[in-house]
Picture 1 (tube, rainbow, N blue to C red):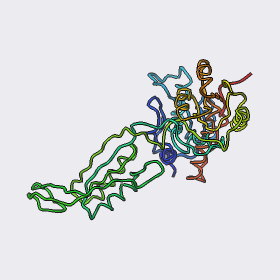
Picture 2 (tube, one colour):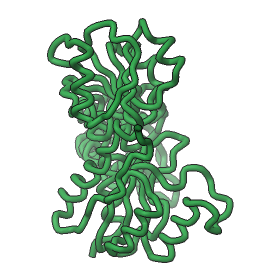
Picture 3 (cartoon, rainbow, N blue to C red):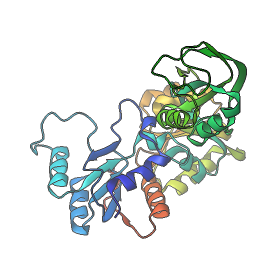
Picture 4 (tube, one colour):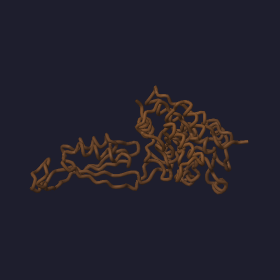
Length: 364
């Protein structure tokens, strides 16, 4: 039996919810995570037509990029489309799940895939996530330090950029005295004991802390393992909004615009002056005009995104080329990512793309 939780866990291995922006509402919005799933319908936006299609196809899980509930609902009585969607989903036992800015923020997500589609190399995160990293410090008898360290690494600790198993280790002496109810691993209760120990320092992301601490405690020989956790100010290089990359050579901006139109099947691109050749490219699928300054700081010649405003085209005309492809056009392939993740793990599971994957913005 495949459950909602089984499908969701695979999607969240790629895009953990901890990476979503504070204003977002990604995750399981409607439904029981333990309920059985027979098939899933994949879409960009959840509309009433999509729910009707799910009922028609007997799909009891709908996975979307944009969350159907974005702002808070105070009443659910069917007076607007969102309320009607939620009511009909519940009535028909259809779970609703969204992977939004968390999918924007990971390698293998919206922005790195967009960069790859455009033929960029040396792809990096544009705006790295802050306050996601923590330092874990523990103290272990020398003979057990490798076992504990390896268990923490296996649980997800020690990743810095493209390196893993990162730690710093210092030899020292720990002191303790066990009370009458203790059963010390070394020393005797009631007596002060000195023990040669290794101080192990390593790093972890917020979402992995629980698993790492559990591994530490399970493999530490002491009855009461000691560990400290510190939040770090360092940015997390492996996650964040947007991406940057480079073209093989400096390219005429008009030629690159033509490539963007072809790759994204774009009808029209809104842009400012095409005043220079481009090599370093920044992208942000969806509504990314708030990251223009970051693209400039990253040395980008052109920034590809959606939802740019008039004065942004004007104000940045001599600083960076802005290419507004449209919100939908710059990230509609989120559905492809969903399909590939699910099909790889559950090759015999019925996941289908909705016929309702359409751009609500039309061009005359």
